Length: 148
Length: 390
Image (cartoon, rainbow over all chains, first blue to last red):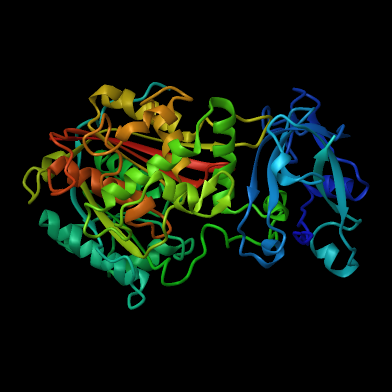
């Protein structure tokens, strides 16, 4: 039985902080351009399609489908070595964007492209002193997906 | 913008050199580059004094590496380019040197690469990365994406969309090994079978150990100058007929992982050359993984999207086949010192000169060179050259 992955803490800047703080509330937060309606990920201060600065954040449904995946059998990094095999995937979100993630909650061999999945969050322990230097004052979590 | 054909056929690759080493714990990277500079200048009969343009990139060099390199070689070039877009950098350097020479900004460009990736135990495939250091990387680093994994994501999608099989991918590795067996400098020369590839351990599904390139030490050098000046040099010049470069990434919306930078860079390079895919006698392309070669062949336009699996079957990309690919054995079997783009150009030039005894593509007149840099499934660059005999 593979060990649990010990997720590293993300580093945020003010462009991405809303996403990571959203994860801390177990909300998957995306951005929409108020001028051209483009939904974008990863978050930016500016719309990459029309360069508008009028960007709003919204909570996504958390539902999507597996676009592609790989069952990882070898990773020499200590955080992942004992967690192999694990499923690295791209998930197409209902709202359009695609994100890199893990698919958990089923046998790695049962993961399929096109499979409907739903987000879940792994809370990371808070460390107020270090968290501030990482740009995330509130709690945060790592989003990953399981079959829905 | 309509591409200009103004420099087509006017710039030449005059000198090339591939360092024979595959394991050099007794050498520094700058030393390997200097030895390669000597080799390529000797090849065309020029000296360091003739060089007035310097181009380089490296994994250990740092952002100002080309300045350190100039210092090491005691060079004061008029034109300096340290563009680093991954393993394809050196193919792009040829494009940049051609533009600079054509514009009169320099006359003789020297492009260098050297690396001790293997003797430094760089675990490029499944041991790089780690905890996030910046905001952009934080959307990838929690998930333990290995280099192999990023290409495996592309392979899995290709198999899903087109029914490409592990056997078809494996045949690419088998063909590269067969080529390497004919190259005395190649690192891995023992013949393998499709069954050997499929029974090698799985690194990141669907890619096995033998679907992955090797890691070696090594280096290479290219000398670029005007076709006019190259005519009087020691070796028959190889002419640049077309060039192009591109980047591909998956930032906004739902990307198509199977359309890669090669599509854009090759369409431009072929348009500039005035040549078609049917005119090409051999192709040297970045084969970091078997899937890289397969999707590159599709995106270069040698077959349609989804037909790559059938295209590589039955020895069609082997010597004597419809389109010989990487006669030197490629990164899968000859050498892969971290970045491999320079060797794609060297092998193409040597094939067009007819210097490749034992692995020579018969009557080779036109070559297509394509380098891929970065990680295919996340963000990558592509650079294409169409080369011909003078």
